Amino acid sequence: MTTQDELHVVFGTAALGQAVMRALLKSGKRVRMVSRSGKAKVPAEVEVVKGDASDPNSTRETCQGATTVYNCAAPDYTKWAELYPPMQHGILEGAASAGARLVSAESVYGYGPVEGEMTEESPQAATTRKGRLRTMMSQMVLNAHQSGKVRAAIGRAPDFYGPEAVVTTIYGERVFYPVLAGKKVAVMGKLDNLHTFIYIDDFGTGLATLGQHEEAMGQVWHLPCAPTLTQRELLTMIFEEAGQPAKVGETPGAMVKGLALFIPVMRELEELLYQWERPYRFNHAKFEKAFGSTVTPHREAVRQTVEWFRQHPKAK
Image (tube, rainbow, N blue to C red):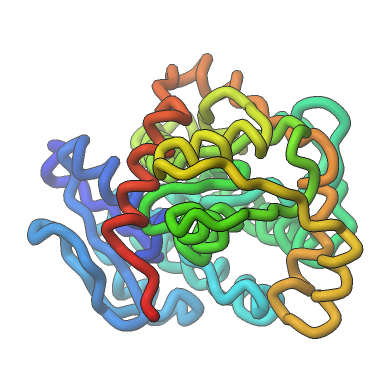
C-alpha cells in the first residue's frame, strides 16, 4: 500500500482534530474528517463526512476503508460522564470493523496528583470524577487491544494551546482575547509553579506519528512537548507577542470553589485545581527514544497562536 492509498479517519474537527489533519497532510496521507454536522473548514483535498461517534452503525460506515482511526472527539466539558463513554465505544467499534489501527487522544487526568514527573508508568490514581472517567476510558482501549478486537495506542498530552483552541482549553479565549485587549489575566493556581504545556500542532504530530507505526500499538505514549516552564513565563511571552504590557495574577482557589457553586463549567474545573496549585511536569522520554521528537519552541508557538487569535476576533 502506498502513502496515497492509506486512509486516515479523524473523529473530531475542533482544534486537535485539525492539528492531526495538518500533520497527516504533511506526510502525504489521505484524510477523512468526521463531524456530527458533516461540515468543517478543511483544505479541498480532505474529505468531510457526517457521523455520530456514539453510534456504532455510524462509525462502522465512516471508518470504511480506513488504515488508521484517530479519536480526537470530545463532548461538552459539562457532559463528559454521559457522552464520552458511548463515543469511546462507538469509535472502537468503527476502527475494529475496518481492521484499522486506533489512536486515542487523552489528557493526564487519570494520574491524579503526582510527585515528580508524570510518566507512562505513573499509576492511574485519580479520585476526581473526570480522572476516574479517563482511567475507565483508557482501560476500554487497552482491553480492546489485548483482546485482539483492534490494534490500538493511547497518546497522552498535558494542557494545550494553539490556533483554533478557543474553548477546549484553559489557555484559549480566557487568555488570548484579554491579552490582545491589554487586559489583566488571572489564571488558576500558582503563577510560579512549573507546568508543562503542549502546542496543539505538536499534539497533532505526536498522534499522527503513533498512527503510522505498528510498533506503537498496545502501549501508552506521552507525546513530545517543549520544555516545561511556569505560567508566568508563558503568559509573559503571550503579552510580549501581543505587544501589551504583562498584567498577570492568580485566581484564588477559594474563588474558583465559590464560582463552582453557580457556574457548571467552573464546577468541572474546580476538582482539577490540584493540577495548577502544585508542580505539573510531564516526561516524554519514551516517545523520543522510539520515534525521535521535534517540538515547536514556546516562543514560536505563542507567536503563531497570538496571530491566529488576532485574525479571529471574538464575536461581539
